[in-house]
Amino acid sequence: AIKNFQENVKLSMLIKGVVFVVILKLIASVFGFVTIGVILEYLIMFGPIAIIVIFQPEIRMLLEELGRKKLIGRHKILSVDEREKVVYEIVSSLEALRKERYGALIVIERNVSLSDYIDKAKPVYGDVTSNLLQCIFFKNNPLHDGGVIIQGDKIACAGAVFPTSSNIKNSQKRLGTRHRAALGIAEETDALVLVASEETGRLSMAIKGELYYNVSIDDIRVTLIDELRPQKEEAVEVKNWEEEEIYEENK
Image (cartoon, rainbow, N blue to C red):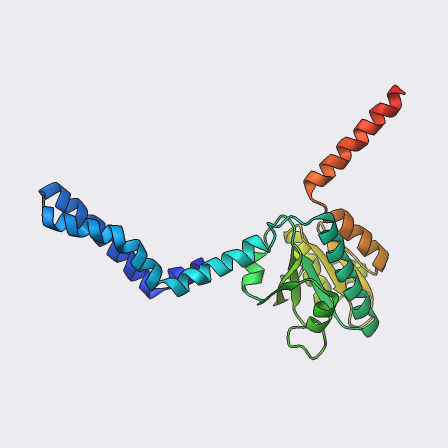
């Protein structure tokens, strides 16, 4: 949205106009041009209203972008029920995709922003559901070759392209583009990446720069629940555990 504003001709002309009015106001104040000063004061007073009317489409576009990227995206802290629902839907979709031998690449954003990849992909901004994920990775869908990025409880985009990793071990050299892309984004960010192989139906997971090939659906479920917990929640659990340990020692 900001980039679009920078490339907007009307906005460029507006900025020049505002600078020109400010300069005229300063000149009028210095040289005592009372009439011009009064006119400029009225212009400054009612100018913001005119700007809102003239640039209504651009302002609406900016607010929509902010709403998508900030309110429903990575800045939304999920409740326990919301987090469990997201995990359930992702795991259900992987189970179905694995059985049908549909390839899939699901990237879950955490603390490091993936906005650069989202901006270049096809926007979705739909709820995370198993059915929607299966539709995206259906073989006849033009977006099935790319990756899906999940922010919070929303699918931010589909058809995302990620850098492929060259750090492949000897035992992983036969892995395809999806697995290399999964490892690549896991090396660059703290995202959780899930892969369903189109050829074998096996599931893989990339996290913290490591690729785990042929993992079970239960392992994925446990890892998602554990890794998607907010840091505050983890801190509270550690504190409660320490308090329980102290209590047991004092008994």
